[in-house]
Length: 116
Image (cartoon, rainbow, N blue to C red; front, top):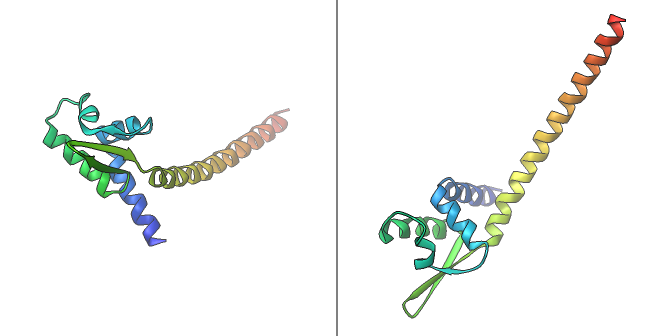
């Protein structure tokens, strides 16, 4: 459980930054070289590489260097773990709001019946 929690903490830490979320979004379409990933961002390559290091350290991406080109790819297993956790939370909240809606409808029906 603790290892699962640690990996979730790391995933959400990485995803807390909009630059890193944009990189993940791009990599879900397929692997890409660092130069291509960095193009849309108004920052120097050293600053951008810090984002990639965070993503790699937290296990959301992996990279390999072939010749002079470093290519990154997304680690879908780690993203799936975060998605699974979010879905579980959504189900819990949805169940709570469904119960609340049922309660309100019941109370409103009783109020209408008592008013008649």
